Length: 314
Image (tube, rainbow, N blue to C red; front, side, top):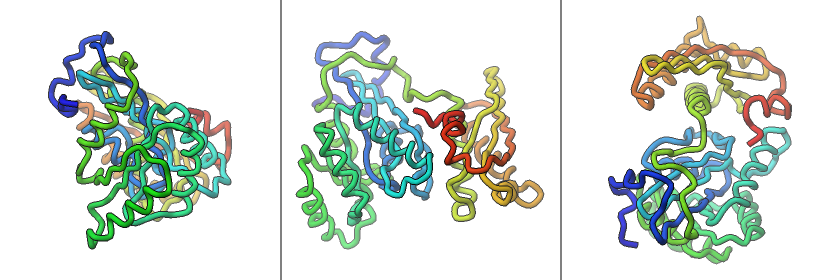
């Protein structure tokens, strides 16, 4: 197609009426944990919609990232990584969320890490075979491959494993080869009117995004010191256009974890809150006040009711 999908005329659409031949649909990002789905989503949208950390299973929800051009609207669905060992309620829920997003797809982008093929990759591919939806193979993190001569044999080997419509080696982090991928995604979507108004970039609320930013800063700050059994709940979100006030609770499962999050004299909790505040101020372009508490609820990540309370039912 001739249009530049990253051009400045995204705002050309002023309502939900679309020109002839307009394309719109769901492109689901699928793969095992830590292959770069959220990084790719953010790179394609040229803005942050999904949080990113070095830890696998950072993404816990289905998050729609909406890219609107004069010729198309792509609704990318970021998903939790499909994984084995889903013994706890949260892990089972994450797998269900990912499976539901596959069922919504008009097109699937199957992400794998360059030079890495695992049993979990094979598990995901088996699920994709069941969907009978056109699938692109996206080999991510090619910037890390050394020597480069190893890349082509790997791509050929993985390509032979499935019936992929197209194959794209990319680096989401470096934004390499994303324009051809986006062009082909748009071309393969059905003709349809847009689902979202121009300017909307996600289906998630501001409060949800604030909770995710806080959780991201928590994971970056603690990394190996804290397990995954942490969640963030927004208790109040008040925006008067001059000052955004956010009160949030960080949920942990044991008293020892609470002490780790708070830190000596409350220093860690203050650092987490400050880091979240600074990013939210950059996003919202106004002053933000963040107040955090840490509370203990034993085994909350294995409690279906607690998960629903924290928004893990969608």
